[in-house]
Length: 247
Image 1 (cartoon, rainbow, N blue to C red):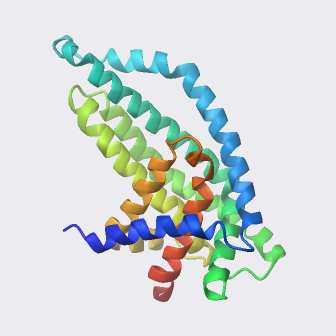
Image 2 (tube, rainbow, N blue to C red; image 1 turned 30 degrees about the vertical axis):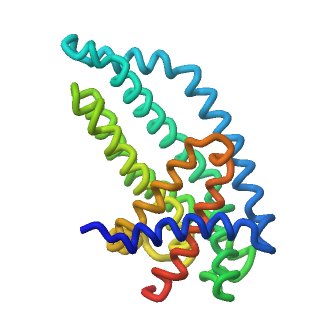
């Protein structure tokens, strides 16, 4: 059953993220994720422009002749699949490189909202936690990679691959975005990855709405440069108001 309250709250936390990045004391923690976003997006966009024509032609070789009259529609959907694939590459790279900065930003947002933080006692404790942060990024990668591969391979199934799979690709991308950014405040409190997944799944519509908005902004020029810190701030606000009291 669709929860319209959760959909509304998903919007709320995404909008709140835009307000929080302008908060006094947070701006210096927002700059580094934005700079990393600009660098990584530029690299991924350059790679995409180099390969998109070849990849599109290759995907279309799997289309049967009797669907030739749908060439333009299926070409558009093939391009959409490729965009989702490159977006996954970008978020994976960004997750590993920006993890320490995003974890620190999540900690500062929680401090701003509650006056309390996670289990970090200072810069040395934060540095000590870096291996755990990178381990969490590997956990997210191994969770998402097999599912991305399955969806990508299903994209070569005639008709279904060019119609239904792009929709499933987007929904799964939205779910991954919720996991990606909610993980920072959860991880700051050293809550295990499986436990976090379980708690997010209990409010799936809330997190799908939030993740869909984050994923959509990632495809909009200029907005895609600053959506990462916005998502961290919004997800941390969601943690504070929806999950913190349960942990």
